[in-house]
Length: 410
Ligand SMILES: Cc1ncc(COP(=O)(O)O)c(C=O)c1O
Image (cartoon, rainbow, N blue to C red; front, side, top):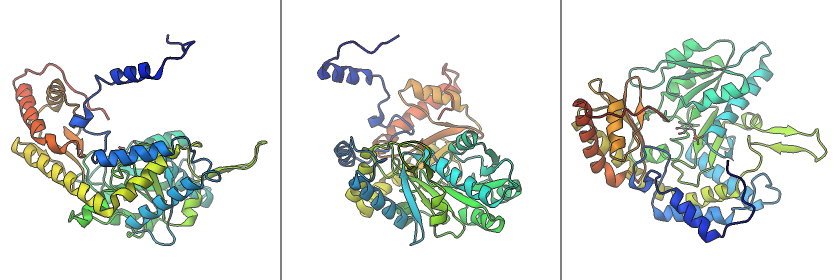
């Protein structure tokens, strides 16, 4: 077992060890991971890092002490709300990531429903099969039941199936913009119609789409409305550490109005140190992530986001085209940065194994089986190399030459 060393080690030695430790990590800069990274160029990364370091020690728990962070958070929320068709009633806050945003939306929906209806015994979340597991995680942690419904043939949530799954215990409906497995935007207007009719909270999970879908739409992508322009949308999660290109540890959670927003926070006054209030799940929040989000948004501006978005969309189209030439069809009609493609004729676990052998971490989807990517600019220059390796991996798998099978893992 490793113990804390009695004596310290000089930084240069530690720095060398840190560098060495990452030597066998996947080459993310070479586009070898199908997700986890959101790279928008060296200049954006430099801004994100520099702003992070400037506020490395400051703490978002102490907005009374750090008016700077308070200002950055307020401005980030305002910029986000403006992008998502917010108005003077909408509200929001920064959180540390998509999962935290989703937890807090679930908590707010649950608290409001329980305050309104004392007959609810086991509050339920109703969502499509493609919704992110963070909802199940939140349900598990907070004593709710997560109910999943089948997808429609176009891989989007099926509003009729969602409506049919609603019970008197349902406290939240979920739609995704887009859903992670196939990258398609759910039919939010129809889901919102169900939510309005049944008096339910509708959360739109735009953790992926929040900071790319508005720009993709401006560039001509076609998908249903999904933000606060749709009556019936109660809350939206949108991650800054994905397509906002901020340092990791930054997301936003937005609410239709102050009442919904009010259910997000938590207050306590039963100890000797005075009233304690946080609107987030966590207490301490790294100031770096807040400053980084603010700086990257201001650095890029809408024009910068559009420029990067266009390149990401072009990369998706190139990959879709190349995959089609190999006989692999895109699932549904993804219009953003995520795609999945496959064919019943192939064994994707084996093909994934062949890709691993060639230095790629494969993303796999199941039911139907295929390959999956959440794209960023690291993928742009390697589409051709990837497709050539994919063709070779398919060939190997077809001839029974691949011995290692990859597993579908997040
Ligand atoms: C659609 C969607 N929602 C939520 C999340 C969770 O976000 P995080 O990993 O930041 O907690 C993700 C992560 O990929 C996602 O794709």
